[in-house]
Length: 65
Image 1 (cartoon, rainbow, N blue to C red):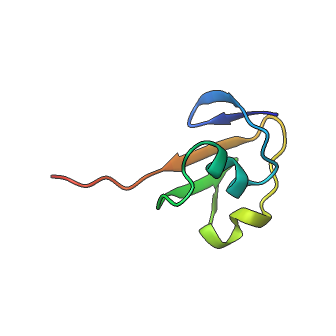
Image 2: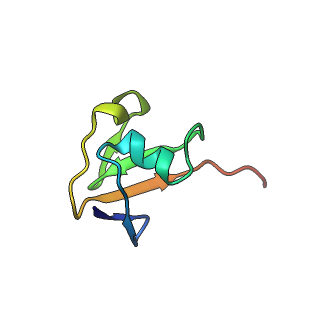
């Protein structure tokens, strides 16, 4: 299905947010996620279904100064 990830149209086979993160290479990464502009806690990603056209934002913490 086609979704938008961080502003880029992306094709995924996943049907949940957790599966999409794995498919996109974020498996064990510590990231914050939002689906259609609503924050999704890490514990809820496995139960959060994706639909064609959804907008997913993935934000990773940065270090440095």
